[in-house]
Picture 1 (cartoon, rainbow, N blue to C red):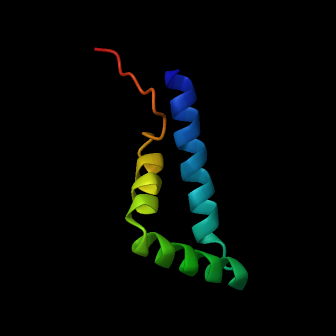
Picture 2 (cartoon, rainbow, N blue to C red):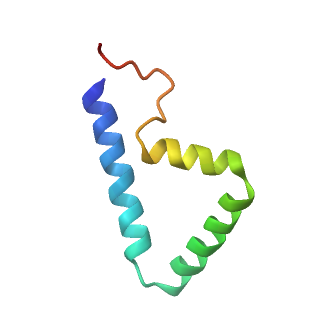
Length: 64
């Protein structure tokens, strides 16, 4: 379970970096629109932040 969470977090980070480091004008437009939509939709912003932190799994159980 922990490896799966780590893998998803790494994949999310890698894809986000690739998306934001690409100079393609269409991707730049899509990024701008996406960021504006997230700014206007707190639920989307929360989901994005939780995914970035690796907390997108509803059954996250950390060992004590």
